[in-house]
Image: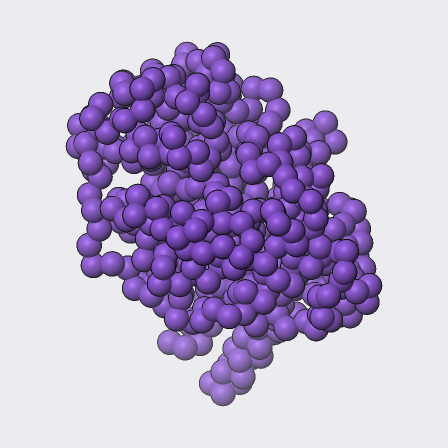
Length: 485
């Protein structure tokens, strides 16, 4: 029996894979262990908006050498998930995704982009909802559905950012959520959650949450209800506190959520350099019973001044002081305890959608959703054509090809991704490459930036050889067993 299992494993794949996660009530859960999953994430969009360019056929997950560099650094940091905003479904992402998978990192993916026709618009939203737009969002699903480390899709990002955008936009965002979930149900072999990433604008936040997480006619299987609700929040700035930052208000407001809640962006950069003292609250008793972690904004230093690594997109990189500060805060956490928490025995059920849930004058209170645009039903029924397809592939060389320096100018020696075992999620200590002290005077982020966000990609205008060894060991074990017989 043992030999048969080993031979089957060899025949199936030589690539270690993360366990696909599931949503259970208001938690992300590993179905194999039964444990809750806390997102320790990083917003990953090298080059900002320019990092996604359909004309030159590139996006953040299309260059394996760049992904190897960044996965190694994020692995050292302790990250277990990346959020990628702008993706080209026509490109091949196999190598980059396989690198991040081997590094123990899940992916949260936006289906929209800042290009015309590739996102819902806040102004005259009905003009941006048509079949070719939906086809593009479904193509992103097709391109990433077969990767086991695809954790979730965002149907929208901050499309509602002020009261003026609340009259018509909510029903269209909910319609896109419905359309994506219907497409996934028909064409994907496992349920991949879909939800909205909201701006932390308190005037419209709670109505947005109520609108996207209620259930039409009280139907627990309502396909338009979000599977998650995420928040881009920058209210904790500098050496703040759980109460001073108003994070306590967020916990109180979301405590009865029927779906997982997490920060899809956080990391106020005023004052700067950042010290990330919010980490202790987000991953501690203050919040972990309500929030499923969060995603730091952001990995690369852009004009908006939120980066933790300064780099040329295609080559060398230098760690900034914020990298060391964040690493220091993560190191204080007990990740073994954090990732072994059990789901709550019960969770609140979704409330039925009703105008009574809406408190802001002018916020859409009609839950009648837009009908599918002409041609969209056929795409959902038959699937996009041609269908992009992704799969994990074997990576033979895990060394980083580019020079990476500490903030003090010293070169980090022998930098490489450390492939993790099957189902092993990254945590601080998985990759122990030596870094020098991060004093780096003047190397950290500086200045201030607005905490606003544009349509899903960056804030420039406002404010990614242990596996091979495991395979060889398995082969040798099979050979030994055959010889014994």
